Image 1 (cartoon, rainbow, N blue to C red):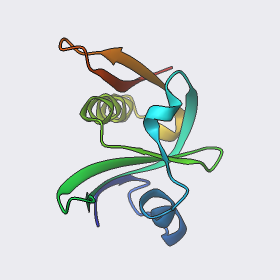
Image 2: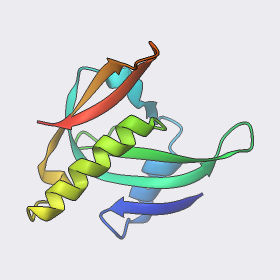
Image 3: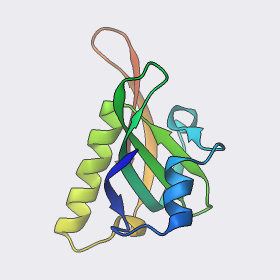
Image 4: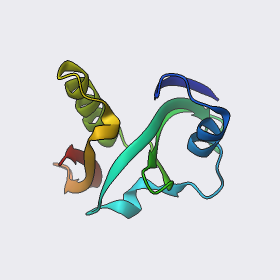
Length: 116
């Protein structure tokens, strides 16, 4: 496991564990339609059950719940929010995020997110 980027940039041990190894970590797709505040996040590389490397985005909410996703759409949407927040001098922890769903052109369901 290798952390690529995180907020805060230097995670303490408990936060890093909560984001990357907590067995109670839940799947982000189960949050579709909900809104939460982000306390911390980590984008990290891990090995899946097939032995393949994959990028995982894990979020720690202000209620100390952890959620993760490998959804490319969600990860891109979230990165856009983080970048825009930085441009405006705001921390991601000052923003609420809503998990949204949609349907791709080929009929597959996906999740993404938006700032609220």
